[in-house]
Length: 240
Image (cartoon, rainbow, N blue to C red):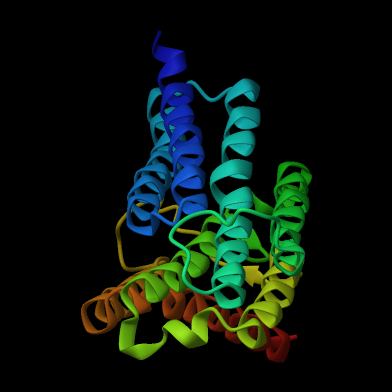
């Protein structure tokens, strides 16, 4: 039973991802956010619990990737699809009665998320940190857009459903998922300042963003995360 505890937590992530999808397709964006919030915590805790109990397994690794594929691969594609649809069809409350072909490019995010997860599983360079944008971060960015639409934050609703924003967003996110861009992870070996400076600075800034901008902060935080990675890569290049 002990060795299956992390797998149960991983399954919670998968279940929440499926529930979030149902909510997204019926335009229930706030419940979708709640399911994803729980799923994201489950995704973080399963590895932590596995390491604590010393019960890491190949089954758990594969199950984790499959769960992530739904919660952080299919979900962001579905969010962008629904936002595109909202920008193209007015005055509907739930899933449209017909397929909107112009929205289908949103699922390129899902395709590149799958490639990213497959690469992660075989890339020994990513045991500590990431190379490329991780799939949870991609999902957080799209959830930020979804909540901006839901709450019409700062009057941005019309902008976040604009194809002029969303199509470039699809391209940028797809690229970042597989880019050779070093990015730090949030795996703390300890909570000392030394060795974790970048993580602590980022978390403090992220908290300030959340207090100041609320739901808008989610997308801004991921933009900041990418900029941290770019800055780190440029700094490393100058040292060479």
